[in-house]
Length: 77
Length: 146
Image (tube, rainbow over all chains, first blue to last red; front, side, top):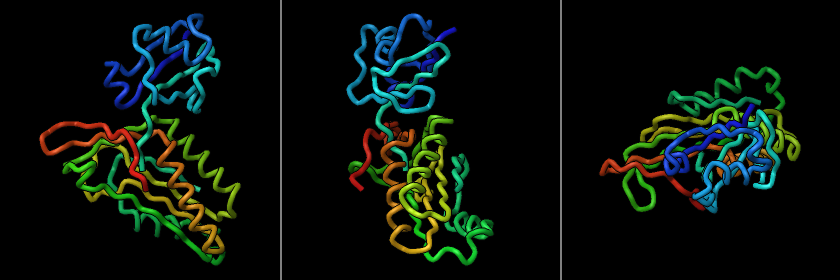
């Protein structure tokens, strides 16, 4: 099992891909998911994160089977 | 309450009228309807804009809009609410978003409509990418002050 990771909009363009998959043992929080996948790229300061479609803070725990998303400030409406 | 994310262009006034007519429970009960329509401009940040692509995070968008309507419902005595939002490719003058609320009295209608729209602008996971005159694609990085 693993954690599914999605990127949206300008962040996806900047990173060069829309999705990642991470073995669930490699991260216990949102911040650790980013660090495990992007060890050489600090998370941009304005990045927002969601777990299973709900906004969460970087220290929020992640578990096997979760969907984690990273994205820039929203600009709808 | 109804939420719709759509790829196709829409006429917000027809949409509003059809929705209101379709809601039998509203007849005779509402005294106030407040609506907001957001429309695409042909300028932004001092540049002329040819078109726009609106991206969203499917499933999270619908879920978050549902949260917004639930929060509005807890704060004001809403009889009904409607949110329609475009995604995909848009041209200047295309309607982007429609928010409408129905209440017994005007105060709640005005306030709830504004609340829903502001929360949508600041939290619903949509992103705009503009096409400029020189062919450049530019992500919109922040909302206007409103």
